[in-house]
Length: 180
Image 1 (cartoon, rainbow, N blue to C red):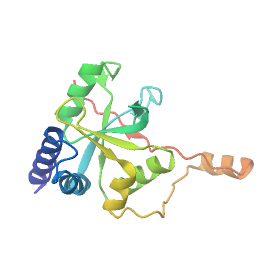
Image 2 (tube, helix red, strand yellow; image 1 turned 90 degrees about the vertical axis):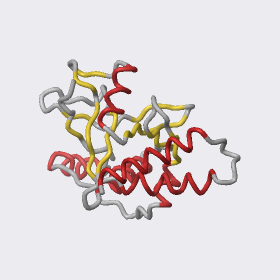
Image 3 (cartoon, one colour; image 1 turned 60 degrees about the horizontal axis):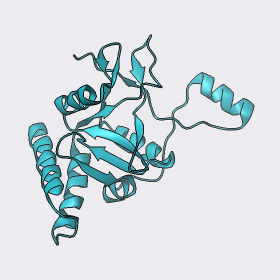
């Protein structure tokens, strides 16, 4: 099943990349691609060089600007993510800066919901290959990702929140994959 979901998602994204957005079938295909992406059991995310914790080999999902829009870079395979890192020389200590986030119970909802709250507008899916640029607002809406967001804080973050009466929202840390 897993193989089928990834293949279907890649097929839809490739079809979108080849179509004109004014084509009568484009909107329906766009919706299918957003739903298919959300059905994937995991996704590969480009990670931020600025947020690397070298001791723990973790980082946060990369938010970078694409056409002036803050965007998450998401891939449907390890190979696509690794190729993107090679092309853009996006490494930490010779490791491609990518990590896997599993769908889990609410992990996708958590990451995509937080990103939306932080002002991220777009999902760049499989950039560097046949790719799609998806609106994060539409992605969240089409997949029924609720607006209720649970935020998990460490003891240190709770102490800081109590002292300053503010909570800093950040994307979760993700383990950097040890691939070459």
